[in-house]
Image (cartoon, rainbow, N blue to C red; front, side, top):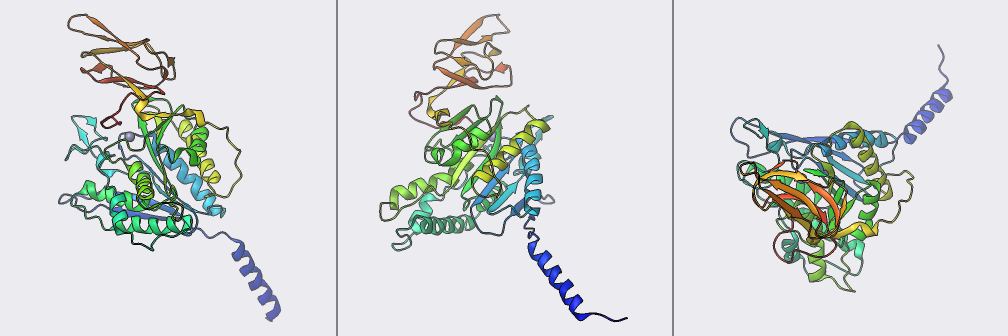
Length: 401
Ligand SMILES: [Zn+2]
């Protein structure tokens, strides 16, 4: 048998050409075991990475409150999209996705009921007490570290924040979880923390600095019905420890000669209520998140321009939380999504021991965006929330427990 050398070389060249046109698959999965578990136990979570380490970075997690299931379903739909888009070579930036961010909370069952919001060992809300690295980084920056170019400053600060997060020394499993999540998110340009409320319409939480820089696009794509803004809502929730260090660094070091950008746009996405767990809803929400990542330039695909939703945002301090005046059975008179006026009779508490009825009224005009699922209310429990435009709360934390 005779071989034609030229034919072999041509075939090899074609092979190289074909290979060079093939997208490089970038998807990597890290399976991480949390340290500081109790003897004989181990808890793991998976962290998915896409991209070559260049370009804008998005960090997305679900299930930090482990009883909030809609986000975890959305995340698995999103993972399918990202794997397909990666195969097509369309991921131009970086995406880090944690579909199940809290194996500790997922494992907490007490007297037959799942407890996913609070760490049973410490009593602390899983979405509180994250390390706020702003002051630590501000103290570490030296004159000359920052200059007149905002993008260069962004990269310097991202590296400093990442280094500060890496140096945290957790002593418990739950703090090790907080550190793990924070180290993957703190140098991201965009952070999406997927949650849900008790019963609610789609809504978002973010800061006034982040809102005009693209969060309105996310709100429009998710068809959010409310957006709540606060500079600092209290308690160090995950989104704010990613975004607000930039605001404090800007206040301390920034100026016309030393511009410090809004380096991390962080949003808590509330995917309706706890019972809104459905494949159809999750598929639509995941598609909306993909479109937003395209709009951000992280994924290379055309997407339609969304209508401006600038009017959607209201102050978190303007939320009217209608509370039960006494304990009893909660009877709601307004559905989610209803617009009410101050003074409207929105709920009644029936005292089942005496038969007495207690009327509950709205304080603000606005949209009823959440209700408490349990119809048994204790004295002063929150029954429902209204998105008011006027500030009602002037001190103390703005989030509920
Ligand atoms: Zn939550």
